Amino acid sequence: MKTEKSAQLFTQAKTCIPGGVNSPVRACRSVGCDPLFVAKASGCTITDVDGNTFIDFVGSWGPLILGHAHPEVVEAVRRTAMDGTSFGAPSPLEVELANQVCAAVPSIDMVRFVNSGTEATMSAIRLARGYTGRKVVVKFDGCYHGHADSFLVKAGSGVITLGIPGSPGVPDDIVRHTLSIPYNDVAILEQTLRDPALDIACVIVEPVAGNMGVVAPKPDFLRTLRELTRELGIVLIFDEVITGFRLALGGAQERFGILPDLTCLGKIIGGGLPVGAYGGKREIMALVAPDGPVYQAGTLSGNPLAMAAGLAMLTVVQRPGFYEELEEKSAWFGAELEKIAAGSPVPVTLNRVGSMMTCFFTAGPVVDFESALRADTERYGRHYRQMLAGGIWLAPSQFEAAFVSAAHDRQHLQKALDMTESSFKKLMD
Ligand SMILES: *Cc1c(COP(=O)(O)O)cnc(C)c1O
Image (cartoon, rainbow, N blue to C red; front, side, top):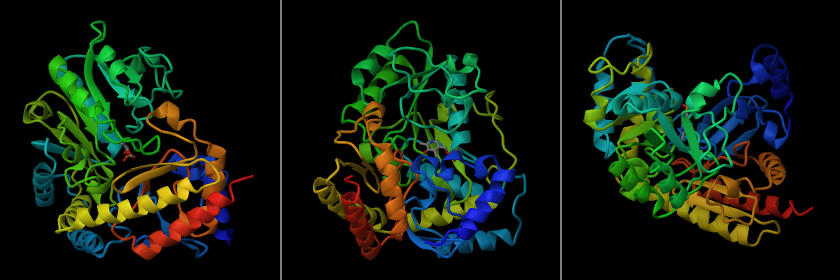
């Protein structure tokens, strides 16, 4: 595979951008290679600057449920751009998208648009704290909620130890108010939430975890979480930045029938443009400025291009059969992967929920961060490089999801299966 142009660009990039990338995992360090620079993408394929084309299972880390450059999304953006790209004043597309989001996501009465998932989660915990007058945020080990200070807490080994910063530059004073506990552990959850010494404002959770690799919630985990938070007056926040509009139109909350108080959205909602959103119960959202005292603002929030892309995306996914087809295709792909994993010479555990899945290089089961960390990341790195050489574009980390999009057809998926099978075989030594 020729990679000269990517290599040249990376050398240049490293002189003017830290690590040569604008988001760390793109640097591909954990899989032992240098990043390929992308020239263009279409449907489920992505082409680098040296002209190599790959079948893409990253989908820009989640947004591209329709694949790249979907004609209706591109046309909506183009048409909207002709009339101006930002107004700093309300415009009709915001109202339209807000209405659709409220109609689509069961627990959302009102929604505020921001520009990224990070902004959505950061604003949601501010609102939860403003609403309850309490301080502590409870999160789960291995869940990612963007890069705001409060969330950068290393997965602590202690059960009820208050957080220590996972990054220099984050003061202890801030993460002191963040508590990280194991995912899927109902006993620790109950013990923590009932601890009278803790002043808990909210619990934030990925209802299906996607950032330690895909980990499904155990059947009683989300239900217990909902019952306890309701009883204790704690705000329950679902971070549906990945799962929203992916696991169903109404996200994981629709799929599992469990409604949070606040929901964070991102990725798919922008159809590939920078959008995030947070929304929920009218009573809580009423506290957001200017109706209420909880401040949150944004120069480019509700940006017309982003709103147009989001609306186009919502139009397509609401066509009859969209989710059924995606689910069916993903289930078939998952079942074939299972077979390959079962016959693999190295231990592999496949976790899948709908169109998001991860092959962990461990015997499993993988049910939380601790068991995810047992995966052999060295082996994943080799698998990643072998797949890339075979034309398959995976996330450059063991702890990410592979996404099936509407643009993947059986032939693309079959090619990925064939490559996976031969890659596993080469991982023996
Ligand atoms: C990607 C992600 C975020 C952060 O979104 P950005 O747009 O990258 O800021 C937050 N939560 C979850 C669950 C995510 O997957």
